[in-house]
Image (cartoon, rainbow, N blue to C red; front, side):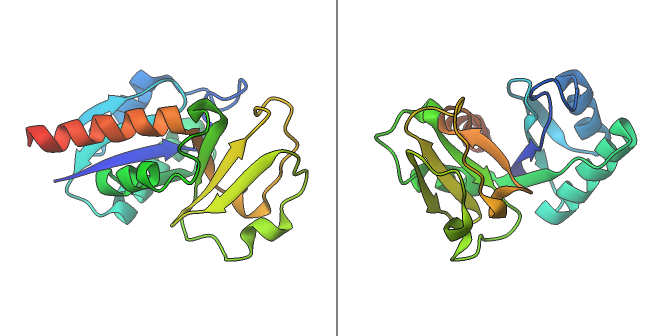
Length: 174
């Protein structure tokens, strides 16, 4: 079994995409995933599965489409991949609640940050399948728009660290 972390895009953010975490847990269990645990109400779930990451993504997206009546994007990482996102954070000294990783399905293009608009005091860096952003003045008033990130989903470093710890704890028990 592989431990996966699924990150749902646009769930319970700003009043959109309402999805109770109990429903998400039930969907994951119905898909055959084991030891399902959600973390905060923004579409973060850790579980074990024998399926490949691509099949996990497809199963969850299909279940979410049936539930919501519209497509919901799911980004999937293994426990090792999520641990790497934490360790590769290019802004380790920055406030973790002001630093995010935007998760993507594919590696961002080398020039992905060159087309960003609304840049003020934000710092940006490319990851393996992520774009890191440090919001020096916080996110609330930021006008930053990264075109390459539009299909992704962002989580702050606090959340990513917690999810990585949840996934790592499972591996130690197994």
